[in-house]
Amino acid sequence: MMQKIETLEAAENRTLNLDALRSFVTICETGSFRRAAARVNKSASAVSLQIAKLEDLLGARLLERDARNVALTAQGETLLRQARRLLSLNDETLSIFRASPLAGLITLAAPHDLGVSLVPGLLRRFAETYPDVLVDVRLGTSDAVLRGLANGSVNLALFNDVGPSSLPTHDLFSEPLKWLALDGGSAGQHDPLPLAVAQVGCAWREAALTSLQKAGRDYRVAYSSDTSMGQVAALRADLAIAALPVSLSDRDLVEAPSHYGLPDLPSTHIRIADDGSKLAGAFVALALANLRPHARVAAK
View 1 (cartoon, helix red, strand yellow):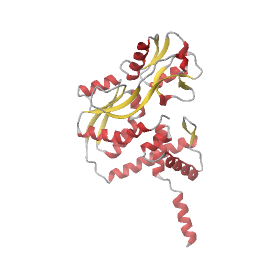
View 2 (cartoon, rainbow, N blue to C red):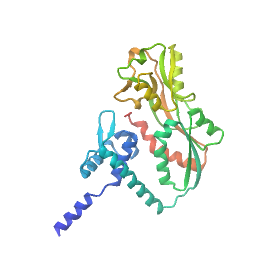
View 3 (cartoon, rainbow, N blue to C red):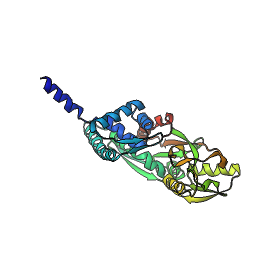
View 4 (tube, rainbow, N blue to C red):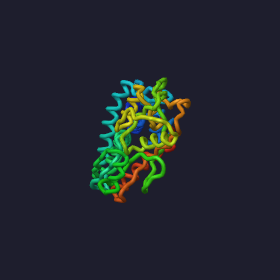
C-alpha cells in the first residue's frame, strides 16, 4: 500500500502546474520577474520559486537572467509554445462552463508600440473573461488615437502621454523618459545632435524636441520610425540618440552620459480613455486590474 501511495505522489509531482505556467508566460511577455509578479498578483520571490520548481520538474534551464534582462533558453522556447497551448485549452474549457454577461463589438485604438507590447496580453485576458465581445484594434499615432475617441470612431483609446491629460483618463502606469544612446558610441557628440524619433504626433517625439528647443540645443532628425524598435535599431547602429522609456535600456543601450549636456525629460504616462459605454468600461476595468501594478515596479 505504501509503495502505491508513493507511486501516486510521484505521478502527481510530474503534473505541470498551470499557475506556474501562467507566471512563466507572463515573465516572457514582460521581460521581468517583478513585472510578471505584479501582473499575476504574487511576490517576486513566489514567482521565482515557481520557475525553479518548473525547471526542477522538467530537468531543464528555462530562463537566463542578469541584473537587467531575462532571456529564454532553447528549452524555454519549447516550453513557451507548449505553455500557451495548455493555458489556451484551460481558458477555453472554463469559458464553456461560464456564460459571459456581455456581448458585442468595441473598437480599441492604440499607438504602434503599445499595439505590440501591451494590447495582445490585454486582448487575451479580455477574451478569457468576455468571450462574446469582439475587439477591433486600430493602430496609429497618439494624436490619431485621441482623434478617434473624440470623433466617436473608436470606443477606447490606449495611448502614451506626457504631462497632464487633456481629457478624462485612467492612468495605468508611468516611467521616466531618458536620452538613450549606444554604450561607447559617438552619435551624441555630433553637432547638431542626431535624433531618432517617431512620427509627428508621438508624445515622446514632442517631449524630445520641446526639451531641446527650450535648452537652445541644435538638433537634426537623422532617423524616423513609427515604432520604438525602429529607433532602437538606429541607436544600435550609432546613428542617433533618442528620448525613450528607461525600460528600453539594456547592456548596449544606456542613458547618455552627463557630459553630453542634454536637458531633462518628463515621464511618459500610459493612459486609457473610453466613451462611457458598458463594454468599454469592462475593458478599462480589466486594464486597470492587470496594468496598474506596473506603476509600483521598477523598470526592468
